Amino acid sequence: QVQLVESGGGVVQPGGSLRLSCAASGITFISYAMHWVRQAPGKGLEWVAFIRNDGSNKYYADSVKGRFTISRDNSINTLYLHMTSLTTEDTAVYYCAKVGWANSWYTHFDYWGQGSLVTVSS
Amino acid sequence: QSALTQPASVSGSPGQSIAISCTGTSSDVGGYNHVSWYQQHPGKAPKLMIYDVSNRPSGVSNRFSGSKSGNTASLTISGLQAEDEADYYCSSYRGSTTLVLFGGGTKLTVL
Picture 1 (cartoon, rainbow over the protein chains, first blue to last red):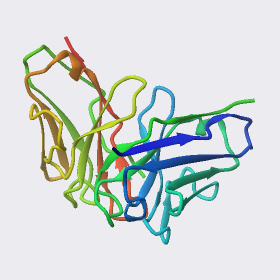
Picture 2 (cartoon, helix red, strand yellow; picture 1 turned 90 degrees about the horizontal axis):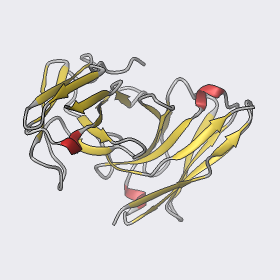
Picture 3 (tube, one colour; picture 1 turned 180 degrees about the vertical axis):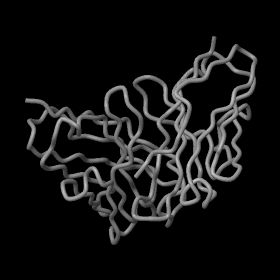
Picture 4 (cartoon, rainbow over the protein chains, first blue to last red; picture 1 turned 120 degrees about the horizontal axis):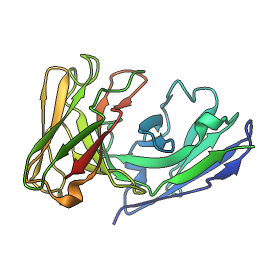
């Protein structure tokens, strides 16, 4: 079965950095674009970043552009989100999400990870 | 990038039907048939309920249905059950570098 397992969350001070990982299993990882979506405490879902299946295209929400970097290692079926210059507004549960159709950029997310909590606090 | 517009809350009694609207623009909801709906229970990851406007993934009850007219999509839940109480989010493809838009979420209360 498909599994997406995030790791790397934790508490970080404002201005700090953190890297999230998302390990995928049960899928042909290289066939699917992947995204990160976050949810601040008590708030709604916010799209964060996209990476094409082969890593050749990457897009970011304006709120994280220039500070966050999405990447992937298809040899070990793992997605990453490197976050820098973190602020309290980045405090959220971060989900990795798989697109529903192979070779599409986005139509829907058919599988989500369990979420990784990032808390930015001094 | 503005979020899609959903009502903050809806409610219904067991057995009744409810609808949740999701309003966007011609650049997202109205321009593409890539509207999806997600159910989220407290502390859990979102779950796909409807994709491409009106398609149900395997395993999702046929009490859930989706539709779209112009720039507004809708999720209808018929025969409400207690376990349907959750937050519901719509999402749409947006043909730009902002690929994905979400609605603000609707809290469904089953009375």
